[in-house]
Image 1 (spheres, rainbow over the protein chains, first blue to last red):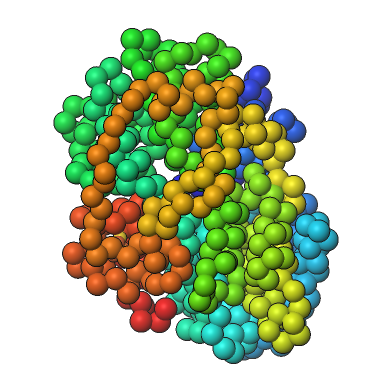
Image 2 (image 1 turned 45 degrees about the horizontal axis):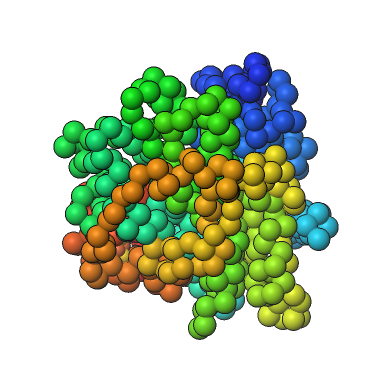
Amino acid sequence: MCLAVPGKILEIDGDTARVDFGGITREANVILVPEAAVDSYVLVHAGFAIQVLNEAEAEETLSLFRELAEALDDEGGRGTSGDGGAGATERHRSQADEAKRGTE
Amino acid sequence: MIDQEALRSEPAAHALVERIETMVTEPVSLMEVCGTHTVAISRFGLRSMLPSDLRLLSGPGCPVCVTPLVEIDRAIAVARTPGIILTTFGDMMRVPGSKSSLEAERAEGADVRILYSPLEALEIAEGNKDHEVVFVGVGFETTSPTVAASVVEADRRGIANFSVLPFFKTVPTALDMLAALPGRALDGFICPGHVSTIIGSDAYGPVARDRNLPCVVVGFEPLDILAGLVMLLEQVRAIRDRSEHARVENQYARAVTPEGNRAAQALLADVFEECDAEWREIGTIPGSGYEFSERYSSFDTRQRLSVDVPPPAGPTGCICGEIMLGLKLPTDCPLFAGRCTPRDPVGPCMVSTEGSCAAFYKYDRGNSSEV
Ligand code: SF4
């Protein structure tokens, strides 16, 4: 029920935006995201954009996952948590610390 | 920007699962509070990948499942009232009331319409001035701002034949209640990602601080969930080993900020007021629901129609309440997969697609012994 789908704003007309969800375009109301602009990525729930996605944070998360995958590849699929695992944990920590700083 | 594939990469998932395996050296119970997480965990088969000592419990995070039977009966009674068009999200249609369901009422001729957005109810109201259009307002903080915005819009456009049955619930108060349950075996919360886009990760601060339970806001892709589990397990270990105190962390920082969506919060504060709310099978949780503020009270269906409903008659033998409190798993219910199936559901947890019994039935039956 709390499903929300990410999409990119193509155009805004008043309170209504046209949002591209990977090729499918739908309208979404943008009254809850006054900071949204054309080219913003937004999460859409029940016909409303409910949050603008933070691209820098998205990239951070993705690069963490890429590193994890590569670390495993480097181990030749041995599947142990050697350096790769530790490196990943470090990244987790820094991400966690950042989040912590942000929340306190 | 967001390459969905990269959030489902198998090598990265393996790396995270290995990490989790090394961290779970004794039993740990974590609760995913959100029905969308329950479905994602089941759908991606995460349970079968995780060590058996890591228990993932479903919380009361399916809004349909926690809507009291008497309110389902009320929505059905409203649908039966002449001159009414009842509008709802699809999830509510098949939920059994004491004697009927919205789907059954529609088959009998009631005008019940499924909407994608509450805004659509305004168009229906404008096109049917001789009818009263009622929206069934079920949902958590992800959904309630969309209904609040629709109400403000109805007010602006002077639409007088639109109202809402307010069955909204709020998450942090419920978490606090769960955390305080005597005898709980709970080590942390997987906090709901999309509720948190609205309320912000700071909202869990009191639960982490006062109950010493780690709260990690987590996204919905498989790698999000696994990474969130690593963050939770690191906290659980630090709390157990070094007596560190629990805190809030945010794995879903691409969508969730510490303070949340201020515009949505302002709208909620304008249209609603906090009230005590009854959670099905759980009971009343003080301050965990919304009713309309004075200013918007004319949009409350209950103020406009008096619909009396007899005391409800619930299903017997259903243990949804204990499942939603994290005390039991669906497979502990004697009716699971026998008397109770998604085709012929007994309790709300089996009827809603986000209910834990439905998710278990669909995806986890084969490995239920592992959980
Ligand atoms: S299996 Fe059916 S009867 Fe048992 S708890 Fe789940 S919904 Fe209720």
